[in-house]
Image 1 (cartoon, helix red, strand yellow):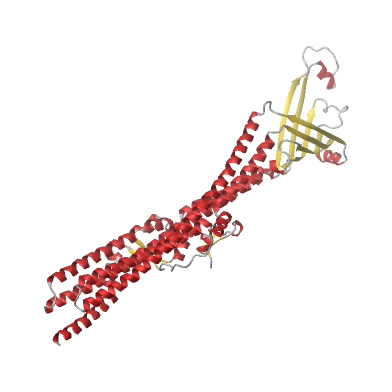
Image 2 (cartoon, rainbow, N blue to C red):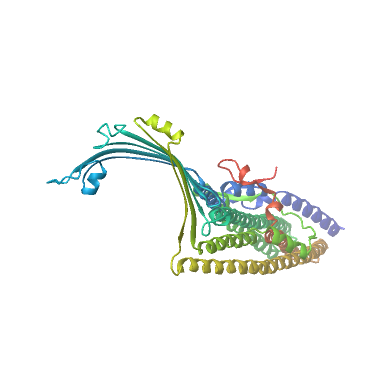
Length: 538
């Protein structure tokens, strides 16, 4: 009867101490502040992604490349901007004339001891507006004005005006007929710049996706090590409970010194496992801090702690063919190669055009006027006092034309390279998607087995506790079963983290990760000043 009473008291005491210790598990374990002098900062997955968009230098560096490429598009269009031209000159000349020149300027053919010196002072000015059209046509509108005072018009008669004022208004046109003819030749730089801007944007999207995938995997890994700390703290609390109970039994003369020492070993091992798990949490900080902090001082004495738990595993229902179709249609790295192939095609067309001879049609039409005043001279222009019209062509071709032909051959080779790169990318996508699907299936199978392991370890712990209550098993046997259950739970958490990471990899390889992560990409036109185009969906 006394033995039964002792066992009953022992059972009630064991249950009470275990409940107290489990509720105060965090009190037994060291904190990050105490153990490592680190300040925990709790982060949700949403805050992590927002931090990537706001502070990731990797993402911002590529985003600057996009801005540079878009500026180069504007620079390419500048070739078609009108150009205002203006010039003028003042000339004062004294020219020794031969006999013919002397007669032409009104002199008499008389033998002279010295040549006649013809003196003229000229003031010339010209203003014009020229621009090139996407067809290659170059148009120039111009006006020229001049004031002339010389030895002839100083004499009246025969001169009507002194000085003479001349004005001309006209237009000239140059139209290439072979080289530089048409939109494909003249808009090549604009189209290449646009494609480069698109390529830079896709490279930025790819970098953003890589960074997001990396921080999501790191966040899930950090969730695992954080939750694993609590698992190990549970083992420590359990070990502390056994130690206190064995010490109490020894004081009452029921237990022995060996069991107390075994329990102390169990507590020491559990504390070591807690600290080891905390060290793993510190090791997982580097990648997140690199992407979330833009200033080195921000990382000092800081420890990221997830505020979210690991998402539960769900059944993946997408088919292989659907994943491949999504990847080929959405992956930025593959789309970049398609854009590059199109760019090489534009360059090839331009190179073929530049290998042609140059044949330009040229035409000029102008009206002129002469008077004693500049206003009167322009009035005579409107009255079409004089006019000038001309039309003709100009042909030129380098003999051999080796440079243009070599550039054309290089463009053809690069176009072939770009096409092969697209084909290689398709093969890589097929292999990567299949690999990601295989990893996801393996992670799902592993998670299922670990859950079976947890269930079996839980049954084993219950059996050992029952045997301990019956006095058949030692407390150390119970602690070993409890540690086995914790190990199984740790493996389950690791498998769940790996399953989520595999899910991230699959979404990244199908090009749907940003949408899966709840990030929206604005078009460049909708981008706010000094703001990222990517933003979390509200």
